[in-house]
Image 1 (tube, rainbow, N blue to C red):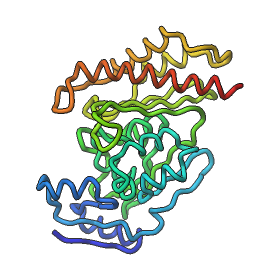
Image 2: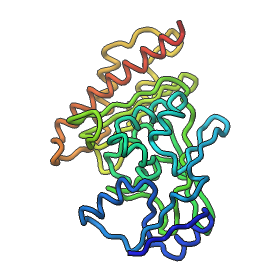
Image 3: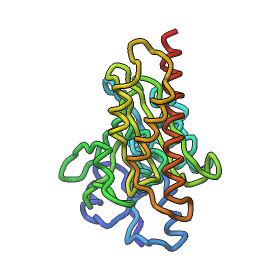
Image 4: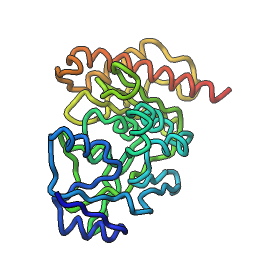
Length: 286
């Protein structure tokens, strides 16, 4: 196995064009596990850790551009106020050591349906910034996932950053597992309220071949929530919202849980998350 270590982004793109089979590595929290368990052995590793600009994040208008090398720990510490849903999800990723190495971009590259960052990225309407020696392009996160552990990257493309809209309202993430952290989610859910657009963004994890949103639930919440009066959340609205989220999933039975359990758990998670977000939204007007 060859080990490639570019010092600049331009050099990384050139190496990826020359060796499209090379697997990019940043924190290595997914790739090294697969290698250590002999589940896969890449022909080459493309180490992106020396590239300084990948470790930067910037504000651009109403969004935060998170470089591919920004770790979960930094996202929690530095961006928790502006990207609360993503920060909440980041807190549930592995151990402190994993959070000090792992990145959202790495989570995207692995494209596991159970990845913790996927639901909040979907709920917020994030965009993935990718680049190759041929040029760059922007991929809406909902179009980035193409199958189980498959993504929309061309063989010569690398993730450069993720563009996430700054929170326009309350955001929450929750997941079901045997523990809060160091566990792969049985299922997970994220919500992002935007009162200006009267929208409740959603994201579902570990309950379909790919992470996905729940558009019917979003439409229902947009129509039924009392955006102007900020009245209490009606139990029927929370219940129906949860049902519509669960109906958008396509879970399977596996070693972590049964499909029926995932469906039920998603409905509960979604109803509770809507309640938490709506209570915070109502409280912000006081």
